[in-house]
Image (cartoon, rainbow, N blue to C red; front, side, top):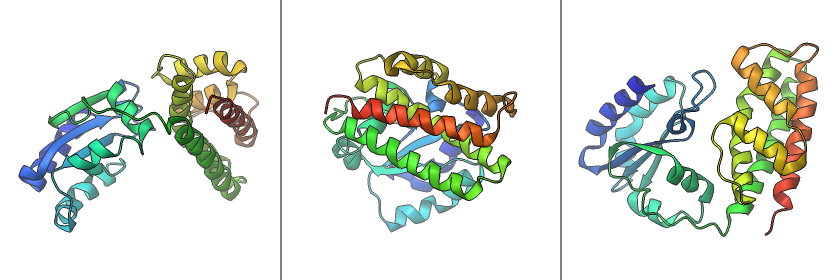
Length: 236
């Protein structure tokens, strides 16, 4: 991970030159909960300006980064960072809690994160991700391998949203996925057995004894329903 992050910075610096303000790692890679096979390396790249010229300069670097299996870096101007915290409270809240500045200035440190729409964003993300999970599952339900991949690829996102649900309910932020699930079981008042089982499958590549991908899906959807109901019941 360290080598590829260093390679990224060394490619971004000559590509953008003096326009580059900062490069920041956030998400699981910055927390220490990064999983080589299942986690992304999330990068915020801040520039002084963003025009088609800057996009053209990023093309080669971003294509290389994508080929390494990571999502394209977020490209924002410094002005956009300072003015969009109310639109992306989840993302900026996470960045303020855990980040690693790989190059340049720390543009996150002095931000004021607007929490006014925080709960609505968490519920929106949970519901939209659940809908997307159902859509994708419907396409691969008869293919156990593809269905299992869908479950293990989505678990990190639901754990992240579960962490934000805990923060909204007044709990201290948890970062390790198993710690998040343990705290959710207490807060929601029900076990998150299938979430834990899918995490175990992600790590081992093996289904629990007597389980199938379809049975895991059923329990997974029930537990995401419980998480959504929990957030929906929080003070608006």
